[in-house]
Image 1 (cartoon, rainbow, N blue to C red):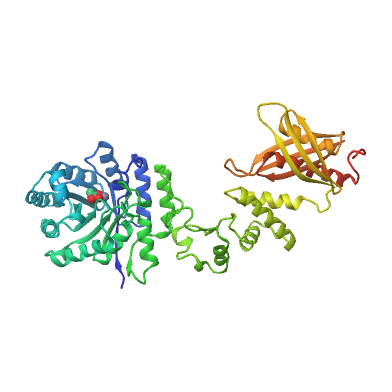
Image 2 (cartoon, protein in one colour):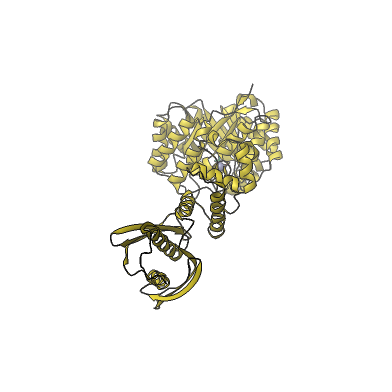
Length: 513
Ligand code: KIV
Ligand code: ZN
């Protein structure tokens, strides 16, 4: 029988406290609704005494949440506890969360209170909170740096006063897993009536150990984990909810616990939070990063196509993604390229595929991000080119910029014979088109349309150029894609010219050189 771990989400309190993550009331409500739907057990909605805005947000969240308990944070002060109780009043299930520091450092410098006075404050604050609700959580701030004997006395005092959850935060992210897990074991063993409370882990990520410490605490006896979506929170953040939940789910062979979280909502929650705060997660962030289910290396892509379990320990569907992504880039292999073309509706023969693959590799060497549109443009460009073109692009060099004249030096093969021309023009495109006309004159043909379109984003975007040529009412369209606008322009023009030649069954102008 797997034991249930309570997920206490503090995105709206500890998460919101981090620089740049503040949320207004409407945003907190949106996030709370999402957390409630995904099955979070306790939503810590804010610190009601901190400001009018925080009070109102906690009150509105309390009013709107349907399933989860709603918690409000307060110091060990009557005014704080009253404010929390008032803000939480509309909640179906309310929890008052009161805290005080217990480490020698915090008691001496921050609180400037002797340990005995701290114990008194614990008893008073917890009893005061119990006047408003049966669900009272007490936290030992800087608990992981507290002397064990004193921590035992503090926890005993809190339980005696009526605390039903005992939270031992690693406030400054200092603990290591083995030590933090042992702390819970020690408390549960030594504190009288420890079984009357649920023990809780609350870990910060200063050493990147927040999730590992939380899992160690669970193994040490904690049955509540405090966490935030995307791991936002003070300094380096809190333990990330998605990582804890997916670790428990994926490694149930080692960690025999369950949560009530609908994991298929994880990505949605992560993206909602990013959209609200403007805080995007790093691409390689576990579970929710853009690369968490993306593969670029040819060897990995090949493995993925044969059996996804070769390189994925969770399914993308389990976190709410439609599928994994085989990212097309310079490391991709033929297998993945062919697969991508199939997905895009192209079924190329072996030779065409080989040509397209070479062009793709060329492009990938020059361009960092290859999007599906790049591949479509690249394959379409290949497909529209006939095998027996009269005119063939060889090379192009252009001098452009603010100093005139712009100059194009073009090498173009006509019937397999390479010719060269240097032309000037009113701008680089005009110079390029004049160079084409120099090598292959076609005076009766005029340019009806010239259009450039970026098919992907970024300064290294691939562009698609469309050229329409008109010869006595016969209109042809040429297209080309390249990451160099002038090369794409030149090739699009040549493409159109070849079509015109083929269409008329004769050269557009008799006087071809
Ligand atoms: O990190 C911490 O100690 C806290 C407490 C207030 C629970 O956030
Ligand atoms: Zn914290």
